[in-house]
Length: 115
Length: 109
Image 1 (cartoon, each protein chain N blue to C red):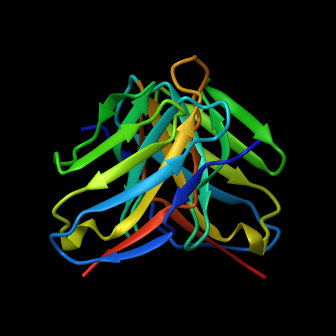
Image 2 (spheres, chains in turn blue, green; image 1 turned 90 degrees about the vertical axis):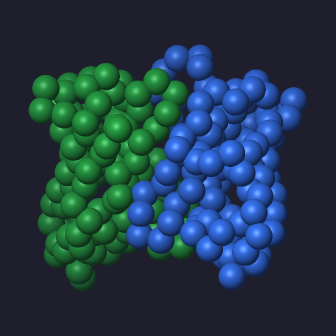
């Protein structure tokens, strides 16, 4: 069984630039969620994708956008980067809306630093 | 706004002792409750979940849920230095998970 994989693991950008983060979901999982975790805080929900459709969004501005592909992999795009976007970005996959607790399984994260 | 609260710690316990981690949540409609462990610089990993009132045991870990008090706890028996990490409480209501800020646990040899 393949776990959740994310790329890149680390990246440095400057303010105003754009970034794309990628995620492959765990085998058998059709739902992908993205979280932002600032240093010393818990993960904050950005959005969730189920069967290529956005299925919920947290309190993040529109410059945070995403995609899910037919193979359930996903991208997180952030435009016009700000210094406060520096964080660990976590992708989590789950079995989605099929019932059960729907526990999240996280990838190793992409650490973004905005200078 | 749905909130999940935890003491940030650090909580220090001696090796072999019981560590008790607590979490409260604001949304009475919450359905499932999760504990994740996060080592420094790593991603969260699931320890266990609970969705019925009472206790649920898994090895050295016991989760306790009291929906009337909106309270979840995690007990770690026979704590080991390898248990030193941040423990995140997460609450699911609908499709969204809300995480607490985490409690940092330090198990002293």
